[in-house]
Length: 122
Length: 201
Image 1 (tube, rainbow over the protein chains, first blue to last red):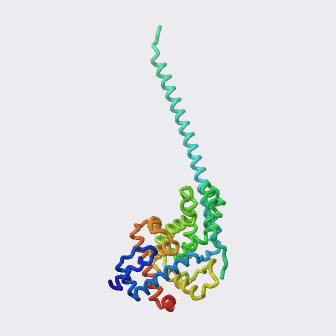
Image 2: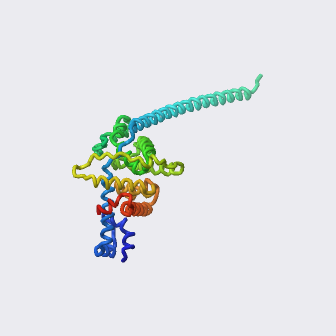
């Protein structure tokens, strides 16, 4: 196996518990150049892990802006839910009124048709 | 160096998360207070742009507030926030890169790093190494940077990353390895960091 081939595999091989082929392992064990390259990747990974605990200072006011944005979104949500609740109430009222009107019309029509069909006697 | 209160008790969010899930806004506000520096740091590392990072933070917490009822609590709140932040940052960066020409000022501006865990034995040399690492990270293309940051800095799994970015696990691995290779080249082959990293090995 050649160093160039191994070099391509090192970004994956550097990971802990990475499955590395035996031929690659043997090459690294016997090649100082590839050992140095692997050491570079390991050092780089250690550095990256260290960055995890290096916090970057947020811009002033970010916390206040974020909390305000959440507040605003919460208010919008509340308004929406009130409106949708009202919409439901309106829809219910309209539906009820429509039902009542239909029922009244139907009752009136039935009443009229009965009057028309009453046989004239005498 | 600027001092700032940073989150130290990220294990202790369970009670607040539970209250927030039941609609307690003050509990959620407290969670924001405790985690926003962490979230901002991740957002800035992902976007490499302060303005974008601020937008990512706000948008991420809005998404978190709306998504809290579906948060199962089997992951830590911070890990959940990382995933939301990664997703938001990815969306914002993709959208912004199409429109914005980066200003020279923002490229030259160096964010101030807070180092709450700095040990007395931390030498100026190792700080310089980490600074050059941060700069190299910023120079990676966004598509590669996001993988390196989420996997190698924040320790998310390939599966978590793939899910948040909407890509396959093999694609996530390929991008990660490309990102590591590019970062390695930037650190060791670049003369801009005065051979600091090469000498460090």
